[in-house]
Image 1 (spheres, rainbow, N blue to C red):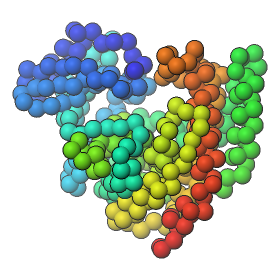
Image 2 (cartoon, rainbow, N blue to C red; image 1 turned 90 degrees about the horizontal axis):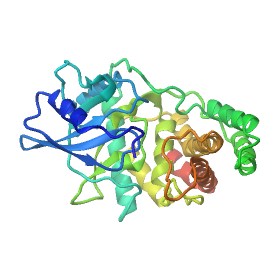
Image 3 (tube, helix red, strand yellow; image 1 turned 120 degrees about the horizontal axis):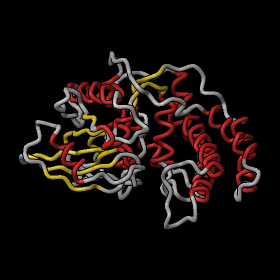
Length: 354
C-alpha cells in the first residue's frame, strides 16, 4: 500500500473539483500502488486516474511527465495525458491534503510478473521500450526534481558499509554481514560499464509499469507511472528491466532463476524496433547491466535490513521490515548469480550480428 495516510473524502472531492475538465466525477480506490494513492475516476463518460502524489516526489516532476507524454503522443505512441488544474498546472496543491493529479486512463491490464506466453510478452515489451526511447531520443527538455543516486552503486555500497559499522547489535547483523561479504566480492569482479551516453528513459521498467492489452495480454500497449522519467545510460534502464522481466519468481523470494528465453525475446523486440544504432560500447555495457543492477539492489536491501527504513514491507509474511528486506537482498543476489551463468549467451545475443 502507499506510504501515505488514507485521504479523506473531503480531500478527494476537493482534488476532483480542482480539474475543470472533469464532468460530475466519481472516484473509487484502486489497490496495488506502493507509493502514490490511486483512484479510478469516471466523468462525463470518460475514464481517468486520480492520484495523490507521495512526498518523495516534488510537484515539478509533472513538467517532465507532460513533456515526455506529449512527445510520445505526437510520435504516435500511447501515453496518459495530464489534465490541467484550475491552478494552471498539471497538478493541484491542496496544502496539508497533498499534491494531486488527474490523467487520462488507457485501457489495459498490468502484471507483477510476465504470465502466459512470457516470451511473446517480453518481445512486445522490448519493442515498446525501444519505441519509447526512440521517440524521446532528441527531446529537448530540462528535467526537473530528479531523484538523486538511484543507480549510484558506490553510494549504495557505502551505505551498506555504514549499516555494518553501526548495526552490530541488530538482530539480523550476522546474516547481513555474511551476505555483504559476498556482495563486496561480487562487485570487485564485475567489469565497469564504461563511458556511454545517456538517453531519455522511463527510469523504473519493472513489469508492473507496462500496460498490456486486456484482450491479448501478449501485446504491450504503453508505459505507465512516468514519475521517474529522466536521463541515464541504457544499461541502467534495461538492466533494471531485465532483473524484473527475467526473474519469474519476482522480488519477494530468496531464490531466483534468470529466464534466458525472456531475455532473448526482449532483446529481439528492443533491437528490432529501436531504429537507431547502438555503439559497441553501449552494447557491451548492456551485457553487464542486469548484473550491476541486481548486485546493487542486493546491497540496497541488505542495508535496509539493518536500517529498516524501506517504506513497503509485507506485515502478513514478516515480523518486521528487516526480515523482508533481508529476503529481498538474498533474492537479488541469487538473481545476480543466476545472471552470471548466462553471461555468454546474453553477450552473444547483444553483440552478435551487429
